[in-house]
View 1 (cartoon, helix red, strand yellow):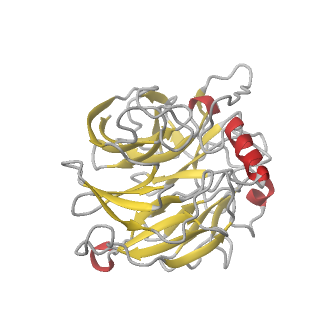
View 2 (view 1 turned 120 degrees about the horizontal axis):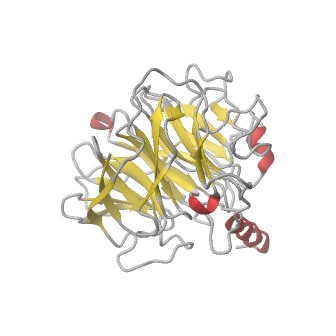
View 3 (view 1 turned 135 degrees about the vertical axis):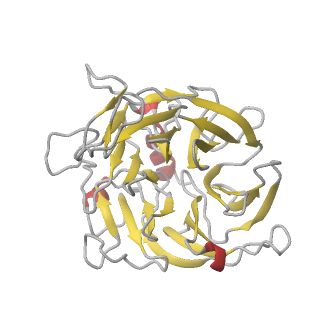
Length: 381
């Protein structure tokens, strides 16, 4: 790593970066609590879930994972997990914990917060058997798709990556990386501004955005900026995407050293960075529906279950519950698992009241314990 890159990585740690690190600062605004709801958007007539919820860890599904990042449940059973640093995708049998490596994704260039990040299954997976992946290459961040053939021997089950979208700015920090197919069948990607703050407000840049693409990597029909895949902008580093039961999109976002955010995403919305962090009085920016001090969150993955968004915190080492009523938080955020499993990277719905939760203690910023990293099964309410 170059001296300049090392300096940038150190700055990312002190300011929260991918999830903060030792020595991170928390320049809290006087008189504000560490986690708070901040109404945004319009509330619907929906019934809000109870203000207080619960989390029970049912079991450890798998242990000994190296720098896990993305998680994708297979429709016939099994969990695919990506390794940021090893650039591999592994299938985990959720019943036995057995791990089978599908193969290595070629072209990945891990450095700092970059590497093999989010993964998602094609909406037509039953027929095309395609796995999508977001990764950092030597020149950019990009999205590829690969054929998965489970009839081949372990280590040889991934086809060659076919690039469907490229040119997303890369950096030692703030690479974004979460991808997900929405209810509309389009591919959404959360990107970071790669440490270059000005990119977030530049709608011609792909950095600091949520992108909306067709499965073939073209700007999706109905995107707010004609001919552009940009769906929303003014983001610092988006690593969490999830839809509620009403098909509304929510996203988590790393703040610098004051406020992390959970946002309800509007097409064409400007979420403020770098001119605003957390709630702003400027009407041109969309305010978050909840915010946290960076020591308490540094949010990565999110999932929707039981009327709430569930948010995995890296530096905060907590699983946060944000109960919803429409596009507002109906009660203050509630924290679970505080410090019990270290850094938490990814949370995915397992159906009904169940969640899959992935820890992130082997990513170079955590304090690995025996068995790290792991996948947990939770029951939530």
